[in-house]
Length: 74
Image (cartoon, rainbow, N blue to C red; front, side):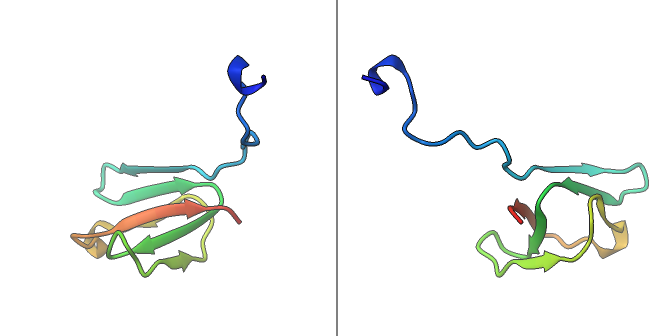
């Protein structure tokens, strides 16, 4: 009966990690996140955890052509 009324059987999750990527005027990439930040050169990994707090800045000269970021729960 609950499902018929639109109730979800899954618990509500309100603490999902967030990730925002932007480019500063200097060309640096700024990554703001909650949780733990992980970076990889491929979408499938391997993922390396970044031991820094938000925001994480990647200098323009250090950028790679293929870079991926994700935020995971702590």
